[in-house]
Structures are given as C-alpha cells and as structure tokens.
Image (cartoon, rainbow, N blue to C red; front, side, top):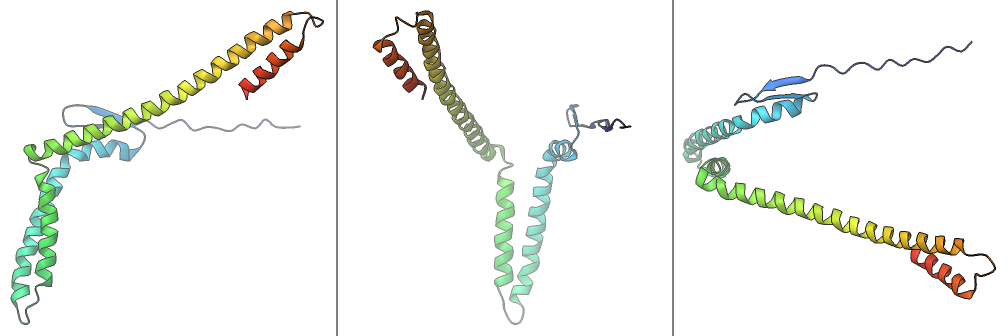
Length: 167
C-alpha cells in the first residue's frame, strides 16, 4: 500500500517593513533591501565623521613626524587619507554634486536606450523571420490546393526557393 507523498511548503513570513523619512513605508522579504534605502540618508553623516577622524589623525601625525628622528611618512600618508575623505565631502555641496547627479542620470538614460535598441533590433529580426514564414505558409497553401497532376517544374522550383527562404 503506497502512501501519498505530501510535501508541506511553509508559508512565507510576513514581510519586513520599515518607515523611511517622509513617511514612506517599505515592505520586503530581504532585510538588506529594506535597510539600504533607510541608511542612504545617513551616508553624509558617516562621510563627515570619516573626514573629522582623518583630520584628527593628520593633526596627531604632525608631532610624530617632527620627533627624533624626523619621519614624515606618517604625516604624508595621513594627508593623503585626509584628502580622500574631504573629496567625498565636496560631493555634499549642491553646486558640486549637481554635475555628478546629471552625469549619473545621463549614464542611466544612455544605458536604458542601449538596452532598448538591442531589444528593438532583436524584434526586427524576429519580424523578418515571421514575414518569411508567413510567405512560405501562404505559398505552400496555394500549392496544396492544386491537384497533384498539375504541379510542374515551376512549382517544384517554388518549393525549393521557399525552403531556401526558411533556412
């Protein structure tokens, strides 16, 4: 006596929800997809903290680079790190961040148009093939309606030509 095989599929848990600034509520099963938009407005705060820490490390490296024996390598590396962090802060200034935003939007539009072009080229090729197949079907239907005794050399050549079209 065979027993029926029952596989219980667990129900999906309730989606995680998070309220974003502005009152928008997001619901998603994946935790990272919920948290990322919520943490994005905090990125400028983290960038400012990174810059402040880099300035502090640079100031702290000044006495170390002057001490006996003088070693400016720590100061140089701290200055390089500080310039990277301050450069990130420049993107927070609206007059400087606007070009970055425009470039990003233009890149997105160009990428979307490129993908759209590829899809249209594919559809064009498919439409040509469909047109050939429709023509082939119409000519084969006409040949099928003729009596077998009437089919001559011209019709055989037409079938051969149609077969070439379909290849």
